[in-house]
Image 1 (cartoon, rainbow, N blue to C red):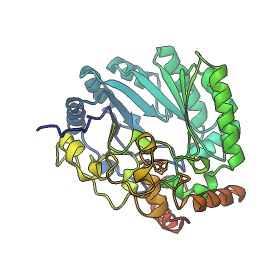
Image 2 (image 1 turned 45 degrees about the vertical axis):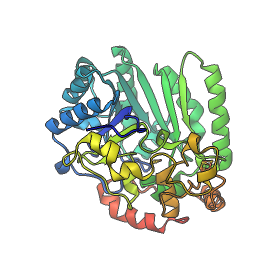
Image 3 (image 1 turned 60 degrees about the vertical axis):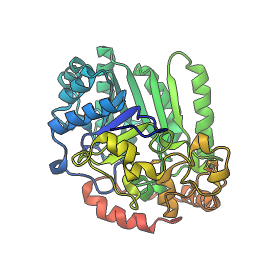
Image 4 (image 1 turned 180 degrees about the vertical axis):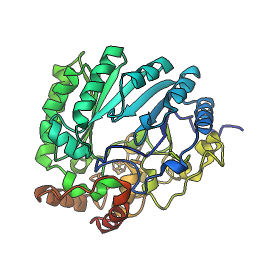
Length: 379
Ligand code: SF4
Ligand code: FES
């Protein structure tokens, strides 16, 4: 099948092998309608997906979830990707890992591991993740990873209920021997949108965190690399989400749906092809969801004539849809969007109020979450 002109192949595959997870983080990027174990692709199909991704040009395979270590065939899938020459990364909550499971993954050829933490303070971390004694377990596994020699990245999602501990989280990453720390402010769609009032930091908190990361980057040069996703509600311009829609990454869900972005199912106006029905290359190059916002032709004003359109690609489609009901709208995080002022006012108001209880990410909360999402202001 000929490759259409002007569309480069993807660089990375995010293989969401399961949505099952022992944690219940209230900002989870999985959809509100979580896919159940019964619909997950079997081992043979995942092996085929990895092969098709490799043939398509993918260089890196990221195994994610949910909690990917819940799949017993994970070492087999990692080995298969490694044997094809893929760079393999495991994104895990780590609470289910032990030495034997880790050894099996290292033996399979795993190149890198990312462990999420919820806070530096154990009680608060366990409360946010909704998993008792999880923090201590994560630290134990991180030390095991260090002993294996596998490169370690710590992932920390930041919000109003842990942001004031960012300095301690950076120290913890250094102490654990991580070479990289990914500090990402919550992005508000799906579960995080439902929990926005409970998660939204104040502008002052957000600004302090930016200064703190800049100082730490300087101080820890050569020790720890800090990747930083800024809190875009208070920013002037949006982030170039996903490096641009359908430009670099593709995501396969547990049941085989192929998405241009891990959160794309939140855009209910789109429908997604499945690897069981259509070849991955055909989906990447010709799939309707992939071509919906590829390039810049779909853009409306003010993006259409904006010089930044090749830099930030109009921001985040998922956030635009969640906030305005239209995925082609300019991301309201952009100060040029007609919805920006309303968005900032909402953020300021929510951050000033006492945080409500979390609606934890679990299948039993999905119906309530859908109802709450439709009532979320600025929509
Ligand atoms: Fe980016 Fe569009 Fe805002 Fe320009 S108008 S900065 S392209 S989001
Ligand atoms: Fe989907 Fe930004 S999260 S495009």
